Image (cartoon, rainbow over all chains, first blue to last red):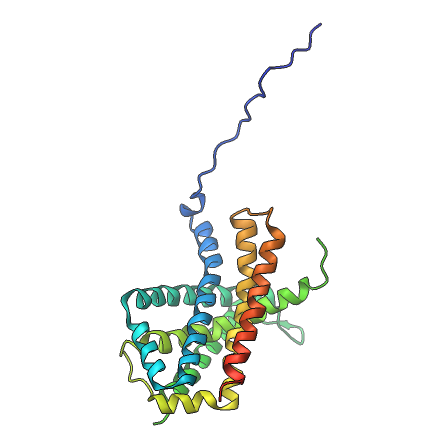
Length: 138
Length: 116
C-alpha cells in the first residue's frame, strides 16, 4: 500500500490579509493612529530643541528659525503633528482609569470621574503654560 | 525575554506619556504655530530668552523633552515589533529606540543646562 506523498506541498488555505486591514474598522484605525502619535512626540522634541538652541544663540538665529517655522511644509507638518498630539492626549486620558484604580476608603472613584479629572488637569496645565508664554515681558 | 529593566522602561514610557498628554499640545500650538504664524502676538526675543533662562524653566524644558522621548522609544519599538512585524531586528530596534532617547536626553541636557 503506497502512502503517496504529493510532489508539491499542498497549498495552505490562508486568506491573504490586506496590508490595509486596519483602515476599514474604527477600532483598528484608532489603534494604528495612536501608535503613530509617538512620531509626533519625537518631532515635537526635535523642533523644541532646535528652537531652544536658536533662542539661546541670539536674535538672528531665532528670527531665522521663526522664518523656517513659517515655511508652508513646516507649518503643514506641525499642524498634522498637533492633531496627532491631541489624539495622544485624548486617548491617554481615556485610558487612565484602566491604569489606576482610585479608592477613597471603601469607595471606588468611578471611571468617568477619573477621566474628567484628567481632562481638567490637561486644561489647567495648558492654561498655565499659555499664561506664562503670553505674559512674558508684558 | 526576561529583562529586569523592562518595568523601568515601562515606567518611563508611562511618565513620558503623561507629560506629553498634558503639555505637548499647548506647547506646539503656541511655539510651533500660533506665535510664528502670527495668530497670537508673540513675546519679544529678549523676554522669551529671559524666561527660558530661568532655572525652573530650564528644568521644565528638560523634562518636557526627555521623558516624552522615552515614551516615543517604547511605543515606537512596539509599533515596529508588533505592527510592522520586524521581529528579526528586535535587538537593533530596541537599541536604536532607547539609545535615541538617551542621546536626545543628553542633547537636551546640553541645550538647557550648558547654554548661558
